[in-house]
Amino acid sequence: MKLLDTKTKNNVLQSMMNIIEDKRQDIIKANKKDLEAFNRDDQALYDRLVVDDKKVDGMIQAIKEVKEQDDPVGNVISDTTLESGLKIVNKTDPFGTILIIYESRPDVTIEAAVLAFKANNKILLKGGKEAVNSNIILEECWHKALEENGLSKDWIKLMHINRQETQEFLRNPTEKLDLIVPRGGERLIEFVKTHAACAVLISGRGNNFLYISEHANWEKAVKVVVNAKTDKISGCNALDKVLINENLPDFEAKIADLANVMKTHKVEVVTDGKISDILKDKSKIDNEEVWSEEFLALKILISSVKSFDEAVEKINTYSGKHSSVIITEDAEEAAQFMEQIDSAAVYHNASSRFTDGGQMGVGAELAISTDKLHHRGPLGLKQLVTNKYYVYGDGHVRA
Image (cartoon, rainbow, N blue to C red; front, side):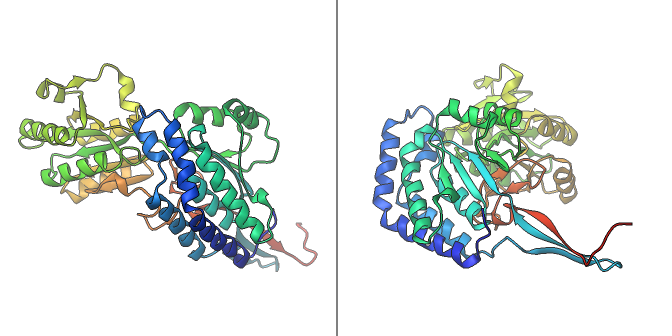
């Protein structure tokens, strides 16, 4: 796709904001069809699917924020002139074509597309079948915004294909792909990594841990656990596992207190380690695989550890490398934890729910990357570009 000037891109985004406002009730009506057809057994997925007035406001706000951000394309990273007179300029450059695979959340159809487009990328959107009506009307809005500004609908396309056809597309793409972002479970991620012929950026899986040190302030610990676990169970930044140091003063009483607090918030508690001996009325985990599971439910695993090192090892072994938290009043211990934990975001005395583009000052996000290349954490506008070297000579040859 050709490079577009900033004004043209921003005009498309302004058109899109106007169109979404005009089509507000039609969007909510289309979403209602998806909600009525959805099996509510999966509450987290259902919560992600809902589009109401507040969600439409959020879509418009996301577009507005991206429109107001600086254009990330063509920015100079470095500018060097060698002794030979050869001038070398490194600039930011679009990826090209991005494919994002996601489920349930129609707002991704807005956020992913607005970010990709402002960064001058073409984007292919493969949403889940549960959001088909919502995604179709949002694609229609995008196409109207593009056409109003004289641009091809090819910039933003919803892939109207089923699961099997998607798998075949990944094996044998009918057009060039430069980056794939799978937002889903382990099976989807592994399939994409196995079959993709281009760069794959992993996102979407949580399984986040929180460690309560023997030096923790218990009041802070309970407050953070409650928020991280119950604020939004469908979020990939929600809490799943709590590790508590056995040397915490009044250990048994505090475990009982935490269990009671979780009961108040209707959170199912499962246990392991010394916690199982204290909370005898709670279920004990029956297999090791639970440690790697992302719950996406009002469910939490509480276990004990004998030391800081054991906590770090457990988190690095089982977590989804998304967000990890330490609760401690010892600043040196917190620093060691944050340095040693292999996660995209590490927290000291704060809820994992802050791992979000808007909360971290990035703005709208394509996803939360748990990869180390090329970026970790919220993928905002600035992260949806690569780089290119511009080399200027005057008949230069290498001797």
